Image (cartoon, rainbow over all chains, first blue to last red; front, side, top):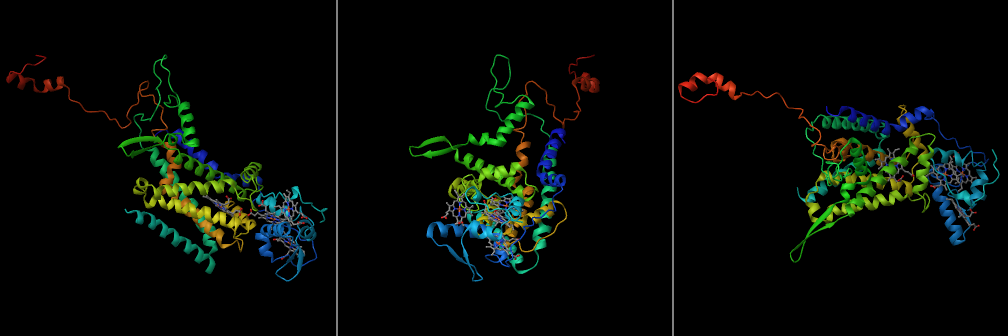
Length: 127
Length: 334
Ligand code: HEM
């Protein structure tokens, strides 16, 4: 082999870079953590089925916003037939009145920071 | 190979693989294979293949400096040298190579030759390939970096910052990443260029279209599951973390689209070492780029030189002196 020193150094740097998550997680020791959103409401059911909520609640929220802001519709009929007022603070955060223990749990985990709270009010935290 | 063959062959292979993963994940319970086994296998193939390619390149000797230069070489003190275009020391080489890798400097000099009516031959500067290439590579790199949010817990600040910066304009929810828009534009350009420009179509092979289609599928499935058909990101991250901590555990019900995305990513990285994509490592090992142009000031000895067996005239004469004398051929030594 020629220029062994340089090439091996290069390869080691490359390997260190692509294995970054490995040693990062080994260092923080948090690879096994999972978010645990706490449900504190007495209700049994969310607005829609739970798997759908888990994947697509942001799409639902945006649909709500568009309906309220653009079409002046305020009432949403869930798939279980119940009527809900389409409101982020008054509906979602009424049942899930523990934003930090609920919404933020998941959001911190996947590193999303919804900007909604720049304008929308977070009700007093309950737990 | 005809154009139709070159483009249809990879297309059919990709289509087959797409149907394969869709069918298998939807109708059987082999998620383990696509979620755990194939990713590990692909990673192993990538690492070993990559090392093998680099080491085998490293074994080829480069006896003479064959730097391609476009500037004055360092010579006498009063001649102004261009150290960037004609690097003289290792530091110069590092600077030049860094600019090449980060900004594609040599591609920036790309020209196009056209025969117009007249007949008139013109060479003009062609920057589109450079622009699309650079946009593609930087977007790809930023997307990969952003993906680290699935592989790190807690997500480092720097990665969240890049994420924020990338959806600065908050177009829609979830926001459209700028790099996603850019990479789609760039890769579309790179693809159309091959299909529409006759000269490039002529030199394009299945090995050129295959990675393009693969990337289309990866980017397409990724954007599709972000914006249209959501998957459960919490479970995706659980899977990712379990994979890299070598305690693989597959959460149920991630969503089939994720397996499509992951499968095509695995194909890409397993295909990587055996394809033109190896230019990732190759660019650092190209002798025209990574050598200092110091042929005149340093002696570079060919490593495969062996001692040549010579028979000098003196030896020849010693051997045949008597015969030469007999034939009356003049000799140096009596
Ligand atoms: C060559 C490697 C990869 C490329 C080029 C790639 C590309 C993309 C692109 C362009 C998107 C669209 C959204 C965005 O830009 O974030 C995306 C989304 C996504 N990718 Fe990848 N990806 C790669 C590897 C992976 C791997 C290894 C995983 C497994 C954890 C993964 C999981 C995801 C998920 C879950 C999404 C959806 C993100 C969301 O909904 O916000 N990707 N990918």
